[in-house]
Image 1: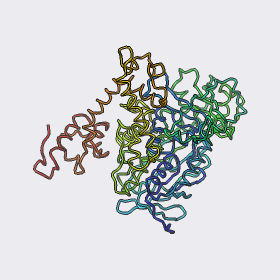
Image 2: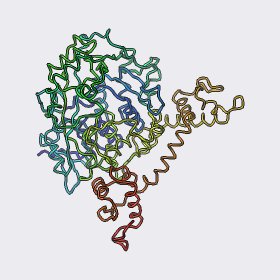
Image 3: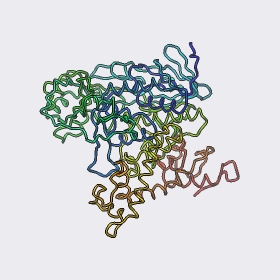
Image 4: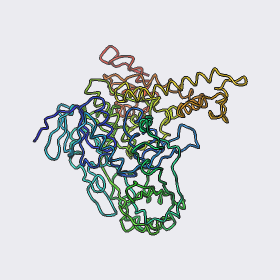
Amino acid sequence: MFVYPKKYDVIVVGAGHAGVEAALASARMGGSTLLLTINADTIGQMSCNPAIGGLAKGHLAREIDALGGEMGIATDMTGLQFRMLNTKKGPSVWAPRAQCDKKAYQFRLKWICEREPNLDVKQGQVAAILHKDGIARGIQTTLEVEYNGTTVVITTGTFLRGLMHIGANQQSGGRAGEAAAMGLSGSLKELGLELGRLKTGTPPRLVRRSIDFSKTEVQPGDEPVPYFTYWKDELFHVEQSGKYPRGSILEQINGQLPCYVTYTTDATAQIIRANLHKSPMYSGVIEGVGPRYCPSIEDKIVKFPEKERQQIFLEPEGIATDEIYVNGFSTCLPFEVQVEMVRTIIGCEKAEIMRPAYAVEYDFAFPTQLHASLETKVCRNLFLAGQINGTSGYEEAGAQGLLAGINAIRRVQDRPPVVLRRNEAYIGVLIDDLVTKGTIEPYRMFTSRAEYRLLLRQDNADLRLSQLGYDIGLLPQHHFKKFETKKAGIEAELARLEKTRSDGETLAQLLRRPEMTYSILPNRDDTLPQEVVQQVEIALKYEGYIARQEIEVAKMKGLEDKQIPPWMDYAKVPSLRTEARQKLAKIQPSTLGQASRISGVSPSDVGILMIWMKSGPPDRANEGMIVN
């Protein structure tokens, strides 16, 4: 066994979206960090659709950016089409989405990681977690190399005993062309983690020249471009006069590429129904549970037979490739059936498949085995992030990776973990859902999961999180100064509108009217940046709704602030219902607020806990007290 001569503060296993954010966060906060990946050429690889954002996912991406993460800037530099979704609805559900150049995104993140001080990137496959007395101390690779570290972050994506399916054909692998991690699952089980099995899938990729786009609907990008990063001024050099960031994909092609909308036909459904027995999902070969909210085309046809056609998006994968991603057409049917199916899509009658669709099964750890810091309960200093926790999507993975990296290095620095609350960030909702409620299917973020979504808009993530990012040492000072300037501008303009009058009314009163916008407001300040104007308009027009949600947050704050003491033994708390006792003992919530969100724990159970906590440890005079 070769022991590598350098000890790291943080070792990150896996270099997907979770691993990259975890490693960069740790390194940027001063920790000596190792990023270990099976293949150093696929750092930041977009395994499925090369897109960032979308409904609720766009919120996560902007929160990562506001805290000091990398996803937003990487997207803006490598995106080839940008859109703001849901703009016909209220601002709480607006969501940015970008179609990215797959290879440009991947190569940029590889370049960023390689150039980051304090971060070593190495290629290797992990075979085992090294641990002693319930504390992680490093990892061992399949080449019998031992890397020692104070903390370890596992971000293995779909690679844990990954098994790919195309019809009856099965191949071991985490994604097409890459080997699975076969030994690490056993090491995680040895530590005491309970693992399950999930499934996800990807659609075929088509050759551009074989598609008749004249039969499809063009879907252009939005102008001006709705960038992801709050620090976009830095993407434009002072001397630059161009419309797009220097070096970006948009600058290279001088504009945005279109996507295309098309539809399946009756023939598509007929072929699928005739071949359903060949699908490993329906024949029982696949054991893992698939994503409910990103169903395969087989699922769509079976579960929604009343729909005459299914909407399909044809999206470019990059400016240096002719591959087209068939969004909405995930399948694991045999290759010959895929060829037939694809050619029933409008415009794809002569389409050629470059890469077939497939499904992949993989191991995951039930996330209720984690603390809210993403540290495992069974092994100190071991953190899990990304799809290993049962989530789906780049954004969910990146958000977890960021928090896991932050908390891993804070453990080294002997600082308390950063835990975001449900009223502070979608990241807080995501992690709280996972560690409190768990999941038995790939978890996907939706705006409907956030009870305070009017407070958690994609446009104000910096106002919510940038102070925290700066305080913990992740957000750079020059970014924070820009944030402070923006915040001061919003506050100053709101104060001016409240005291400035026009025809007997304050400008604030005028702007609250539904038909009034800042652009036609009397005595407006046309020198204000658009991002300041947007915040001013939203603050005034939704003032009542925002105030109502803030009252709801204040009501819940009491429960969220009440820490459950370490001496709590749920077996000794009288009057708790059996289900509540079992769920509380298994999940071990950190606060009464978290306890109240556990399925099977009623308000009366929470009330009993509150009384028991006030009475103090049961080894005192109140042991055996009966609570009615």
